[in-house]
Image (cartoon, rainbow, N blue to C red; front, side):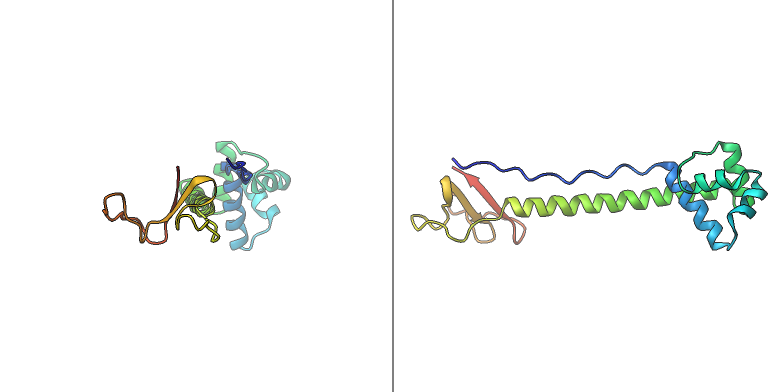
Amino acid sequence: MGKVVEFPRAPRAAKPLWRNELGEVLRGERLAQERILTEVAGAAGVSPQYLSEIERGRKEPSSEVLGAVTEALGLELVEVVHRVAESLGARRELERREAERRERLERERSFAFRADVPARHPALGVDGVLVLDLDAATAAGGATVAAPPGDVYLLAA
């Protein structure tokens, strides 16, 4: 029989971290308010370097520091937590859709068949692989096989 060739899988992206999303939310709010880092850091009682590291997702602040930064931005802590959760949820949904798209493409590639099928049987392919387009196929005994339009299946003999 033929040689099986595996396609390399795309490396999985690292899961997003809470501190990265938190940093993006805090930086986005600070920039939306058109405030500079030193101003917000001074109001929160932290160093500008530390606030910068929080915004870049390099440091995970304690609840006290996070409370001080959110207060300096005029936000409630629950609002910041909600924004972070929404951001993580949106990212998860994008990843889910991308995974479905990759799976669909992989399935389509695996069901692809060659047009130069040997003449001995109209649906018999190389190495005894039976190729059926189920849009027009019927099962043994003449019963119609229902399948979503465009789905193609390979049946090995």
